[in-house]
Image 1 (tube, one colour):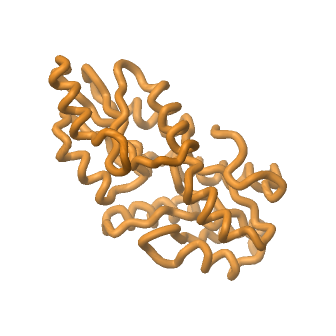
Image 2 (tube, rainbow, N blue to C red):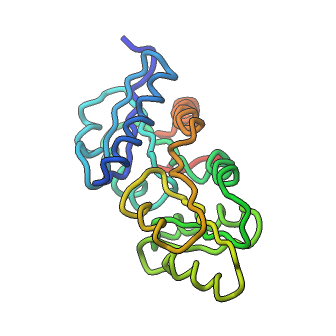
Length: 228
C-alpha cells in the first residue's frame, strides 16, 4: 500500500495529440519523481475520464488542478466533483514563479511582448493573468486566443503600427492545442514553448500536492491558498 494519498491530476483536456501527450508526460514525470505515488490523470473538458468520474472511485486522495488560474473549472467543475467528499483540492499551478521564470528564460530580446492566454471572463482568472504580465520585463500587452478580449494577432499588429520592430509572444498555456497553434500565425517574431516543457513543473505539481496534505485544505475554500 502506498504511503501517500492518490494524486488526482486534473487537466483541461485537448483534442491535440501533441497536447495530450505532453500532459500525459507531465503526469508520468510527477510519478517518477515520487516512487510509489499513484497519479490519476483526468479532465474537466474534451477528454475522458472526467474528474467527476474519478473522484468517487478513489478514497484517500488529493486533487491537484493542472490549470493556470483559479477560474471556473476550479471553482465549479472540480468543486462539484469533490463536494460530497473530504478530498482536499490544492491551489491551481498558476500563477507561480516557476512559470514566470520559464517565460523569462525563453523570451528573446524584443521591443514588446504579448502575454498570450486562453481568455476568460472569470475575475479571478483575469487577476491572475494581470499578475503575470506585471512581472514580465519591458512593454507587455495582454492578448487572448478566445473570449472577449483583444486577440493576440491584433495586439501584435497594434504593436507593429506603434513602432515595435520585434514582438515576442509569451505563451501562458500549459500544453499544445488549438489555442497554442494560433500563436504561430499571429505575426510575432517568436513564440515561447508550452509551459509544461519545463521540468520544474513536475516539481511544482508535487509541491501543490504536499502543501495540500500539510495544510488540510478540506477546511479551506476550493482553490484557496498561496499562489507560490
